[in-house]
Image (cartoon, rainbow, N blue to C red):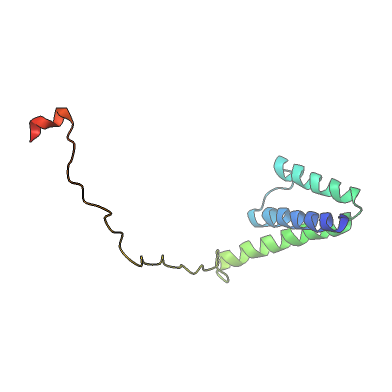
Length: 112
């Protein structure tokens, strides 16, 4: 249970660090500070603060280097996605029956 929570906190710290590094957010921006404090406080309770701090720093470095590589053109911004075409209909829909009479509203009877 504690190990699962540790891995989850590590992922959250890495993602936050990546976001901060990639978008060059200031760490003292309110939402960044609050998220970081929440993650680090939880890590302190579980006695895994060192692991979480290193995951956060690794995320920041990875985010910054990813942004730098995109600007330099060494990697693409988004990975190529293979587009799959929609399958063609096996058979065309058939008319289930022929309508013999059409009821025309009274106000349209003048336009016959």
